[in-house]
Image (cartoon, rainbow, N blue to C red; front, top):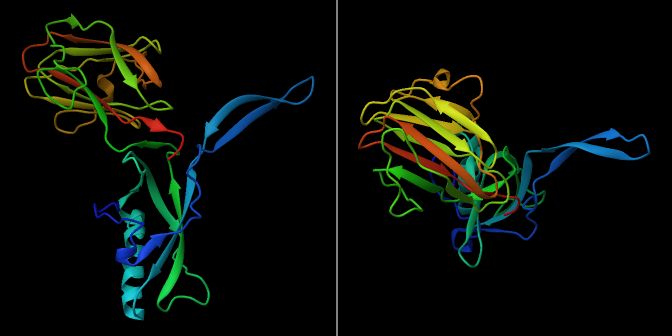
Length: 277
């Protein structure tokens, strides 16, 4: 999907183009290993840093005439080039069983064509840079608390009450690496505490919300936005607050909403991430 929302199936002979077999860059995320010399010989790995990945996508394009081929070539190249102005596109991989994964991509190059071709057919070898090297689920998962409804796994979901601790809730991340959630908090309540027992990390939001007011908290990148879209990072309790992630597997988390009244809700939404397509 191009960043303007248009969808471009890449294996579509009926449209005049098709993906070739030499796609690369769909395996495990590349990493940089930081090592130190070991006094007894060899090295010891001190840090493993995931790197941006590059996906190479060869695409054959053709037409019944030069002008038809050229129109298709130009339309495809424009769709990819939109990432230079509008932000990343989404490359989705669909398997025969219907399962899908996607990754955010920026177009680098690839519409130079092959020498000797270009009249009624040509091959684009497209390079796509992925800032986040991990593939992710196409549809986010969500856990909802309170009186709102938003694709909950828990049905019926727990209700918020004044100063209530909602106990140890199991939140499952079916991905292979950490997932970075987004929170949507809707008032009324006076403050909010989120504790991930699995990680031993907590954040506290000291910002009272009136009925219907909403705060959005993103963990990657870390941002807090208030009811009018204003930055509210200062409303986190410092020092000590950590906008934590979800580990692969089961996470034991605990939520506390102080002075909550009917209408208050908390939505925890996240996309599982995977090493490969």
